[in-house]
Image 1 (cartoon, rainbow, N blue to C red):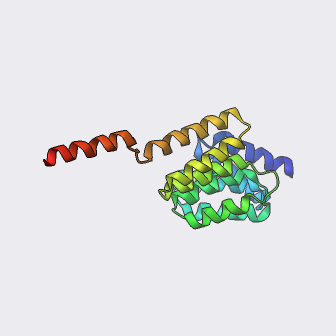
Image 2 (image 1 turned 90 degrees about the vertical axis):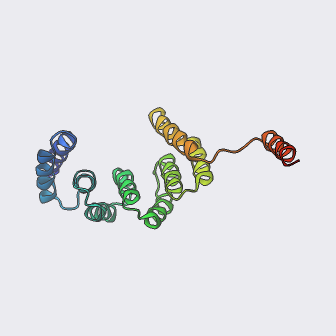
Image 3 (image 1 turned 180 degrees about the vertical axis):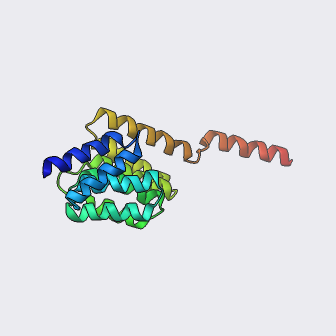
Length: 179
């Protein structure tokens, strides 16, 4: 039975980005064999979030997968992405805080998601602190590039600080202009 489930899950994974009809069909078969298969539930959640834009249904699938197995790490990123899109920021924050307690979790990924959460809340200084933590806990070159992209995006949104010399110079010019 596990062989059949995995066969359909792999087919769904293969077709997910290119042939959503076949992917949905394969997920239906996989979930018919085992309605609690975390990978099939995660992919079904992604289908609802990314293809059908039904975020509430997607969140329900992700929660079902997490209820089945809390260390189903394949759920974490798409679940957080969906919470961010759906503007469920409190739920995202609570989940990130909880996820830090799960043994084996990618802490770098969690810190980066915490940075994205802070960015979405316009708390750019806090977001940069989370980026530093993500960099410190990262051991994956490819993920390091993603962290760098998020860091650059946040830095671009941060208000520009004037130099102190320029500020003093501007004040002197204002006084001269007033006389």
